[in-house]
Image 1 (cartoon, rainbow, N blue to C red):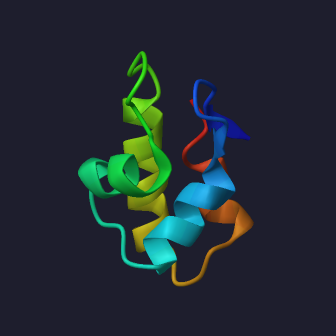
Image 2 (cartoon, rainbow, N blue to C red):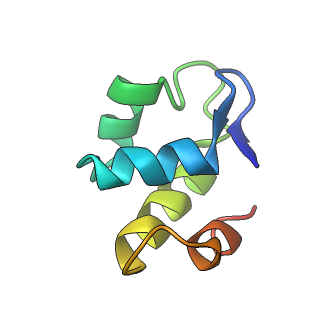
Length: 68
């Protein structure tokens, strides 16, 4: 699903960024442009990032837990 409509960033891209080492919203902003425009995606993006780090692997369960 799209998390950031302004930058067309999906939850999958956030999980991939987490697997590459993104740990914070600042990391996502630097790598994917999350929350640079209107900022309304910040909370969901943060939830997706937390879910990605909580899951043993990038799976459907991490995707479901970040749906706003």
